[in-house]
Image (tube, rainbow, N blue to C red; front, side, top):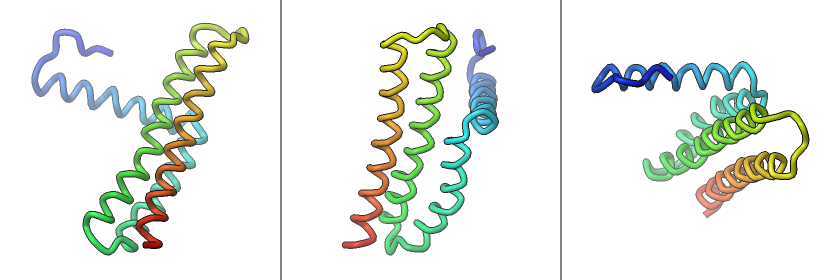
Length: 120
C-alpha cells in the first residue's frame, strides 16, 4: 500500500512486497488456496513429466496456474464483500457466488486442457 511516490525499481520492489504479503495472507487464511498450492506441487512436476513437447508442458502448467490465480481474485472479492458488512445482502451473495463460479471454471478449464493433451 505504501507505493505512492515510488518510481522505478523501488516501486517494483514495493509491489513485490505487497504481492508477497498477499500470498502469505492467502496461505494463512484460505484453505482452498493451500489445497491448490498442494496440488500445484504435484501437478507442475507431473505436467513437466507427462508433456511430450515444451508447448504441451507450458500449456499444462499455465492452465493449471490459472486456478490459484483465480482463487486469489475470488478471495479478494470475498474479503471486500466481508469488509462492507456482515448482514446478508443478495448482491453480496451474488458477488461471492460469481467468484466461486470463476474458480470452478478455471478448474474445469484446466481439466479439459489436460485431458485434451494427455488423451489425444
